[in-house]
Image (cartoon, rainbow, N blue to C red; front, side, top):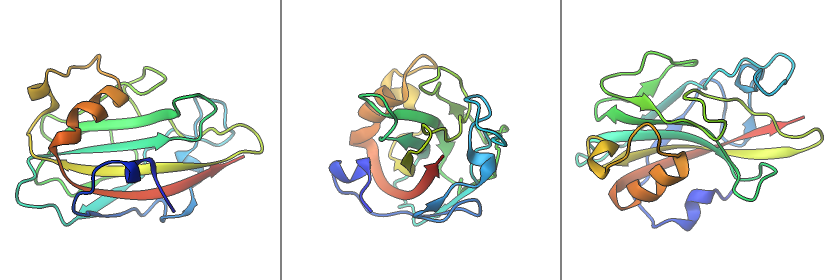
Length: 172
C-alpha cells in the first residue's frame, strides 16, 4: 500500500509496530475522534514502537496524516517532535512526552492527537510515520509552537535519516 511518504527521497527503513493497530488494518475505537463526534471515539493516540534507527539519529518525529480527508491538503491529526534519540516507544494516549519533546498543533490547531473521523461511508488511509532526524530539535531550524505539521515536514526533510510508516484505516 503506498503512502504520501513514498514520494519523498528514499531513506533507510525503520520498523514501526503498534499494539493498537496493525499495518493495513482498521483503527480501534479509541483512535477515533470524540472531538469530531464519532460515537465511542476517545482521541487516544495509538501505541507505537520502532527499531532500526541509525547511529546518526539525534531525534524522532512521529505523525499521523490522512491524505484522503475531504480537503485539498488532507488532514494532519498528530505530530510529536524532538523525541530524544533513545526513544523507541510511545504508549497509547501519551501525554507525558520524554525529554524536550512537544506536540505540534494539528490541523484542528490543537496540540494533541485528534482521532479518525472520515465522512459517513468513507474509508480513509492514515499514514502513521516515525522519522529519525540528524538534528536534536526542530527548533534548530527556527521552528516553534506556531509551525504547522506541513511546514515542519517540509523543513525536516533534508534531516531525515530513516523512516518507517504503517497505514491504519478509518471508516464510518
